[in-house]
Every structure is written in C-alpha cells, then in structure tokens.
Length: 314
Image 1 (cartoon, rainbow, N blue to C red):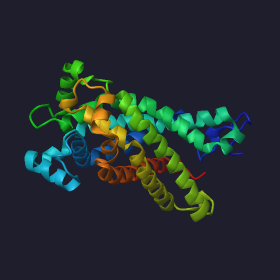
Image 2 (tube, one colour):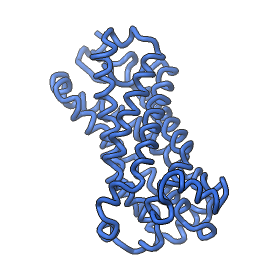
Image 3 (tube, helix red, strand yellow):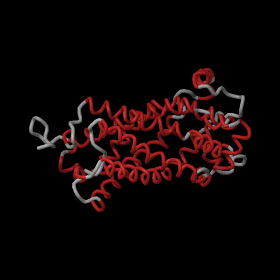
Image 4 (cartoon, rainbow, N blue to C red):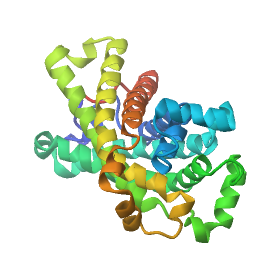
C-alpha cells in the first residue's frame, strides 16, 4: 500500500504521490524560496507605503496618498527601497518555512501514529508550521531589520543599496540591535501568521475537496488543483493579516528614530492597541491575501513541475 514504508509500517512520508526523502524536502525548500522571495520582492512598493503608514501615520494617511507622497518626495525609485534585502531575506525565510514545514509535519505525524494523526490533523499542521517558522525567522531577521530601516528612514539619512545598508546596520548595532534585535517581535508576528497560513490553507483546501471537488483529487487537472491552491491560499492570507498585524506594526515602529532605546512594551503603550491593530490594516489585508495566494500557487506549481503533486486536500 502507498502509505506503508518498505518495512511494512505506516509512515507519513509515503502518503503522497512520491516518497518524502531528502531530495523531496530539498525541492520543497527551493520551491519555498521561489514562492516567498519573488512575491515579497514584487510588492515592495506596497510594503514601503505600509511601513511608512505605521511609523508616520500623520504624514502617510492611506495607501494611495502614501504612494503619492513617496513618489513626490523621492521619485518612483523610492517605492522600491529595500528590494534587495526583501528578496534575499524572504527567499531564506521561505526556504525554511516551506521545507521544514513538510519535514516537521511528517515527523510529527509519525510521532503521533496513524490514528492520532487522523484525529488531530489540525494540531499537527499548527505544530509543524510553528516549528518551521522559529528557524525561518532567525534567517530572516537581519535582512528584515535592514529592510525596515531603509524603508522608514528619511531620504539621505541611511544607505539604500543593500550591502551598504547591511554594513551600516552592523556599524550601528549598539543602536539598531542588529542582527537579531527584532527576532522576538518577528516571532510574535510571523509564528501566529504562519500557523494561520498553513492551518487555514490545509483546512480550506480540505473543504474544497470534500464539498466542491468531490471526486478523487488526482482525477482533477493540474490547472484545477492549482486553482484550489490559489483560492485556499488567498483566503488563508486574509486571516493571517488580521492575526499578525499588531506585531507587524511593532516591527515597523522599532525602526523609527524616535523609538531608539525604547522597549517593545513602551512602544506598544505609547502607540495604543487600536492603532497597532488597525493602522495600515486594509493595505496589509490586500497585500497579504494576494501574497499568500500567489505564494501557495508558485510553491505548488513548482512541486507539480517536479512531479511531487499539490499540497493539501488529502
């Protein structure tokens, strides 16, 4: 039977169309790097605007006014500030996020056994994604800190080219807390985000295949399966944005010169919970919904091209 290891025992690594060996996990890491690096870098203008709305809401009053303000002051190139660290940082993050999720999910399923896996699938999705994100954020943190500093510093006060900015962050590490000063707020933003992203993706994909596309999953074309992937990813992304937005605001505010030396508690108290939870939220819902949908679509397109099948709905 397909779900049995060569030893004859039930093994989660043999549930899919191909065995989950080292080559499978390596390909998942590459697919994750492509999915996250390309999508995050592609929406840099939205991210620049969103970060400035969080840090200076009186000046950047909304998505379109914020875009106009940036272009008026810095030209169109101002919208692409932080592209380099965004692409590299989120490629690294995606590599560990997706690759290690597949690894931890299989490991926890085997630890739980067949019966408990079928009963507690949701808990396994949550544990696998949280474990992967802990590692992914350590890889992302130095580049995320650099990106935010580039995007929120007044023009001319901080280097924009990636390598110059990284050198400056290192030179000012006593002040900027580089390279891992933002890892705790990053975890507080990204771990709930990723748990929601993977849990709701898996859950929504399962609902699609249970109630809409009720024939065996393999009987549907790759285009249909990838359509399910995108829809599930988009809907999961909307939930992600709501869950993680307050922590995302804190990460942006840490890069503001006026908050130098302040604790996270001080920044949160001065800003207020309502502002943390709502300022820039509409932009982020649009950004993260689209981003997450395309991330899953790119990831599953890559897996399909590698003959590994699409994710979810089993």
